[in-house]
Image 1 (spheres, rainbow, N blue to C red):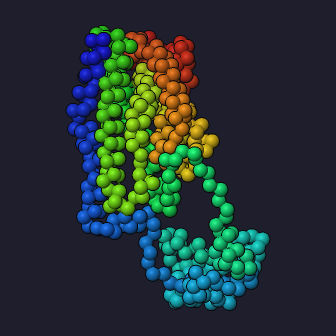
Image 2 (spheres, rainbow, N blue to C red; image 1 turned 135 degrees about the vertical axis):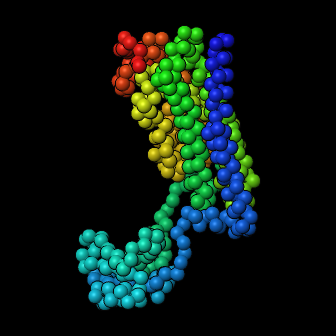
Image 3 (spheres, rainbow, N blue to C red; image 1 turned 60 degrees about the vertical axis):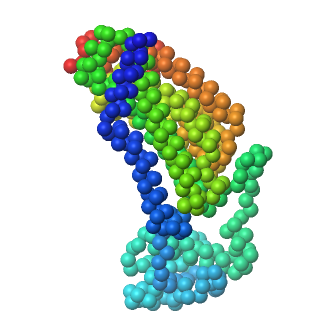
Length: 421
C-alpha cells in the first residue's frame, strides 16, 4: 500500500506541476469567461442575438433572382416571397445577359423534363457559398407551391406535416425551444467536453507507461515495486488529475451558463440541469477507469511511445461512436439507438451525458449503465493486471489488436527475450 501511495503521489505532483498542464487547466474555463464578459460589455442587450448570428449567414441586401421556366409549371409567385424577388425570363440568353449586366444576382433554369428529372440549374456570375445556400431555397418553394395548385393552406400543410409529439409522464420534462441554436450546441459541448476529459486523462496513462519503457526508467521502477502496484498507483494518481480537470472545467462551464444565461438569451428550458454535473462525476470516473486501464494494457505491450500512439485510435473507437451519432442523440434522446448506446459500457459516459443535457434519463438506465461499467472496470483491471509483469514491461512487440485481445482474455502473449534498447 505504501508503494502505491508513493507512485500515486509522484504521478500527481509531476503532472500537476507541469506548466502546460496548469495553463490548460486555467485557460480552458478562463477564455470562455473572457469572451462572455466581452459580449456582455460591448453588445449589451443584443448579446444573445449576436451569438445566434454566429451560426447563421449574414443578412445582406440581395439582388433579385431570375428564372427560366421551360417546363411551364410556374404561373404564380407566393406573397411571402414577393413579386420582385423572382423575375421571369423567356430564354436563358436573356437571363444570362441580365446576370452579366448586374440586373440580377443569378438565375434558375427549370428544364422541360423537370417532372421526370427533378433537376434545376442555378447560374450566377460569382460563386458565393453563403449567398448560394441562402438563396437556393426559393425556387424549390415556388415550384412546390405551384405544383400544389397555388393553395397557401395546402402548401403550409405540405411543408409542415403532422408531427407526432412524444410526451413523457415526468412533470419536470419541460418543452425545449428547438429553434434556438443552443438546443444543439449546448448538448454537443457537453459531449465533446466529456470526450476530451476522458480521452486526455486516459492518454496520460499510455504516455507514462510507454515513456518509462522507452527511456528505461521502467527497469528501475520494477526493481523497487511490484508491477501491479505500479499500475494501481499510476491509474489512481492520473485519475485524480482527470477528476480535478473535470470538476474545474465542467463546474466552471455550468457556472458560466448560469451567470451568462441572461446575457446570451438562453431559454430556461435549455439550461443544463444540475443533475448533469452530479451524475457526470461517477460516469467520468468509471469512463476514465475503463479507458485508462485499456491504455495501460497498450502501454504494457508496446515497446515505445510511437507504437502506443499509433495503437490509440483503434482502442478509442467506441468512445467516438456518440460523437458520430451526436445529431441523432440530441434530436431523439429517448429513441432506441441512444438508449442502447447508454447501456453499453464503452459508449455510456458520452451518450448518457448528452441525453441528460437534452432531457431527463430514466433512473433505471442510469443505474444499469453504472453497473455495467463497474463490471467492465473489474474485468479490465483483472485482465490488464496480468499484462503488468516484469518480462512484458521490459520488452515489447509491435501492437496488434489480435494480440491485445488475446492478452485481455488471459492467453499467452509472445514477448522478446531481451529488453528493448
